[in-house]
Amino acid sequence: MNTVADAAAQALSLVAAADPKLVDIVLLSLRVSLLAVVFGSIIGLPLGAALAVNDFRGKRGVIVILNALLGLPSVVVGLVVYLLLSRAGPLGSWGILFTPAAMVIAQTILITPTLAALSRQVVADGWGEYREQLRSLGETRWGAATTLLWDLKFSLVTIVLAGFGRAASEVGAVMIVGGNIDGVTRVMTTTIALETSKGDLPLALALGIILLSIVLAVNAGAYVVKETAQHRYG
Amino acid sequence: MTIEADMRAPLSLLPLRLDGVVFEAGGHRIIDGISMTIARGPRTVVLGPNGAGKSVLLRLCHGLLAPTAGTVRWFTPEVPGGPRRQAMVFQRPMMLRRTALGNVTYALRLAGIDRRTREARAMEALAKVGLDKQANRAARVMSGGEQQRLALARVWALSPEILFLDEPTASLDPGATHEIESIILALHQAGTKIVMVTHNLGQAHRVADEILFLHQGRLVERAPAGQFLKRPASPEAARFLEGELPW
Picture 1 (tube, each protein chain N blue to C red):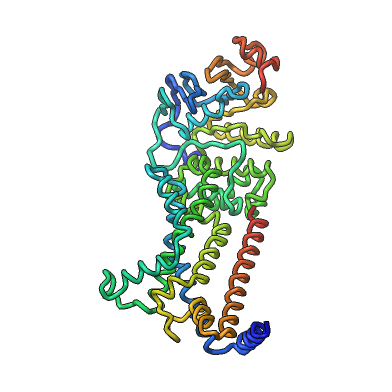
Picture 2 (picture 1 turned 180 degrees about the horizontal axis):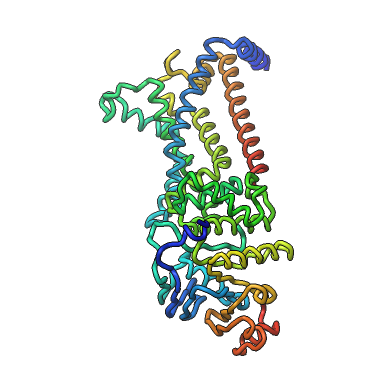
């Protein structure tokens, strides 16, 4: 018990002192996961909206596959991206394996299905409500998808932040394609895994506290945004 | 030039002709061979008991549903993908999460109206329904009556040739109902053909010039409102007016 208590105390002092090593790791984590969320949103949200408002053969199959990808294991994504980016792989010439760019690619692939599947559900509900009115006004399907994305933006914020949560907390993909290189590709989750295995609990615990705080703050922010918007815009 | 005049398309949509229109869903025949013509002019009210197919008939006319058999033909059809020259107001108004003004300008954008004139036209329409002072309020937090007036302002800004209304006052109190009816009459005065579904006989009396009476998916009777409400020709209509058929 004492070990845990000591580690917690040291962790808090590291956080309080804004230890430079700790700050670098946190900033890299945020940079990688935020970029992955931006790219994932640019691809996933329109994809989800388009799927919601368009009818085509095989749509149910696509939805089932997309929903199944919600449970996509991060190590599998890491492995696939590793194979693509490794020297012998089709994208080996890019030379970005074991760089933050590779980590952004892996996390984008990991969370895009999440963003697409969840936004499809939200937009499909909105489409059910607005469909007749929008068609009556002469809106096209693509126009309706854009209108709904804009109209439901406050609900979509929650989805985007869920995507950020998944990206920031995954360890498998970034470990494989980043290589956990000190000062280059070491992020919060990979450091926690490494330091725990080495027995250096204070740094691991300090990062755990920060990771939890970020996730908590992000979710609280999403809740406040959604509540305020709902109150103001109905 | 008024907004009614400059929105008018060169060739009329009307008359609308339905020929042997059938609509089936889930093995159930909801509209059973309706043939009729709807021409410019009188305010047409579609009456009938619950389940008669009134709302479905309106959606078939407006193009939201495709008939299982038969044809729905406009004199000059709209250009696919082009701005619409007909409009519909639903029982429950559907407003986007933006201001009252934003909801009207959105419809004007879809109608291909130039960005620079949209706001002025929208404000003009909002003033006509008495909502100009509330232009910057969020539409979805307005009362039911205000939202329905806003729906009518959205339509008025577009100056459609024909307006379909599906029980627009079904969930409103008498005061709001009166306001909506006044706006409908004013829209008609401004040159828009009115086709409204109701099961409220008082409303039919106040709004209708002619009545289409539907029963079990068939057009049973069509007559001038005064004549229909006093002396219906069909036994089904007589039973409906006596309150024997459920509203």
